[in-house]
Length: 223
Image 1 (cartoon, one colour):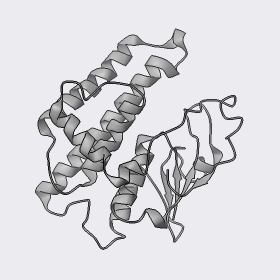
Image 2 (cartoon, rainbow, N blue to C red; image 1 turned 120 degrees about the vertical axis):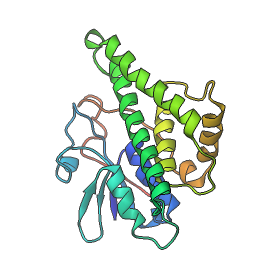
Image 3 (tube, rainbow, N blue to C red; image 1 turned 180 degrees about the vertical axis):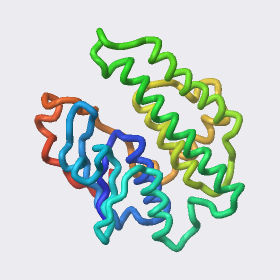
């Protein structure tokens, strides 16, 4: 299998962490691709009409995109404990946490657009603050809801990778004043799957940023 990846994407990292957790990382060729709404990556668009990573090219050439879809596909390829639980109570708790994580990442990315990525004269502080309120609210919610379960599931993977991006981009200090969430996050970060997939790299938004990388994606064994 081949995974089109971006080393600073919370969604792509989610898939790679999941692959490590279910023992499939060694069966996936990871290929980094820079993507941005302002810089068209033709190789990614050729596989995903949305032009976004992650994209998984399966062994039978089926193409899957969206991190949640890819993770559920991978969960069907191994014989171990499933990270998408089958019992309704556990399954919907995990899916709810995954939904919170995806919304958290979306809001954090929107904050970053208004705080630093958009040209300064076009930034909208009220929009930034509105999205930041979603980040804060999600973290407050997680402080009251996060569990101390023994078994990691898709919700845990999604939350850990989304929060790691919030920390990586200095969007918000979610650990301050939240001891339960902070302790849970530190436990997740200590897992081999998280240690093997650190976020790194800068956003490429235009040709001047991509002069050394665009058109030349590189394969990596582990990110």
